Image (cartoon, rainbow, N blue to C red; front, side, top):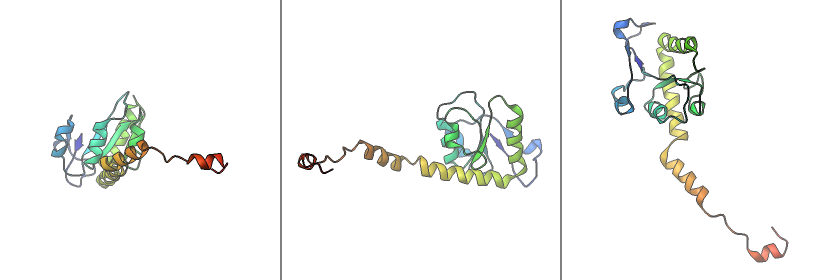
Length: 146
């Protein structure tokens, strides 16, 4: 998690914070200048990523597992190849040089989570799939009408 203040193109080290933040502590970063990083070699569908996006954080993640289902590269974050340190650095530099891009990607991530991962909407879709389909009356099948 990198966070900076002010309008400096690349903030001085005294204004940068780097370190792990567990999902329970994400509420400590209410501004949309915080960036969520998930450089991983393997992932399923990471809940931590969705939690960060739901808080309006932009994301820099490796292109593994189902991460691309949540991060649309260049729209709500950046996807980088696994084990590609320079690609990770480049993505981070994009955000350091453009704080507005961080906010834009954060808003897009929040919108994506709200649209695709809303609990109530997903439960309605799930229950709709579980409802029995209407049966065709037997008489109509015997008449050859479908």
